[in-house]
Image (cartoon, rainbow, N blue to C red; front, side):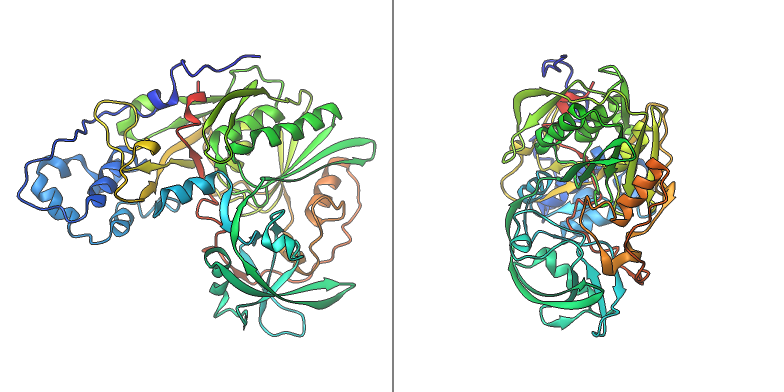
Length: 500
């Protein structure tokens, strides 16, 4: 086993080297800066933002005259407004402003204040005796308030806080993610009839959600087929993910179905580890993916993610590296990979598709993925002079405010320099779960429509799902995200030491 020593050229040195000087000496100026956060926002974006050279307001000449620079910053009474003004309006759909860095970092670790309900991004007209619309629950986090209340995948929400859902008030569904208390009305299809399950009072609590949501081995037509529902690339759950592949390896599976239909991304390092588990025949150190940054960060271009033999473990509470590695359970004989996809399949999930397609056949089953070939670094108000942690030193940030930034800072390529999925990966085998809204089956049920389609593709069988189409989706909820970073691909400083 080859360990990756922290003494090697680390990401925090290779990636976070400054090309500019930031010191603590106050500049001479006759203008009072009204909001110090504005200075952090501008300087951090000027230093790191991927499209810095394309945004006139981020030009280095802003700093030629400090009085003029401060007067410019003072035109923004709100630092989030300044941040939004600095984004590339034509190309950037994913950068965001962080009001509370600690809360955001918890989200990255799978820790959130939540009811444990995950929703798809579309709703349908109800065909029950109720007027209005419904939205189905795509999955429920285990041990969450929703799970303990008996709410299940496939249940239909028709009411929120006493109001029936309609196209005019569907935004109420957003309360599922930002209110501490909520009442939802649930109905479900049972024996062909829509039955009212009643109204549920839920109180959000802090939960730690294991992204390894379901795993099983399915025997069909003489083949052992591994099935994994994986909902987020969280680096604090490397051990749990690796254990699944230990089981797959011990059972000597013939095929693998990776269900990423609800996986919007996460840690780039975790994506590289998962690929190392899937494509185990690649030598440790072989190139999986590489990163490119803005024109000012040229020295970071070419930062590489290889295939790994060992995975680093991170503390679930702090996110810190635990000074421990585990041998990766690598599958050695897979010739192809089947991935279940949807519009919610994004970022680090798409990195799996892109990174593995030079080495094996990757068959996508579902709908076109989101199309996000770029990622971010969490930036905080921690300017340094001549060291390697410009705006990235989480523990060294100023305590006078909680603001951070999550801007796009890099794009990612596979070993063939391919980066051509800005519009998403179309499904090789099209199938849309939303068409079966009124009969959503549990994960692992061989008749669940998406899994059944994948199994048929593997076996060449003609078995049809027992599910029948109910209604086509009639409205999208593109603005409704389960978490802010749901479509994100990111690198945390604690993870950066393991690049080569």
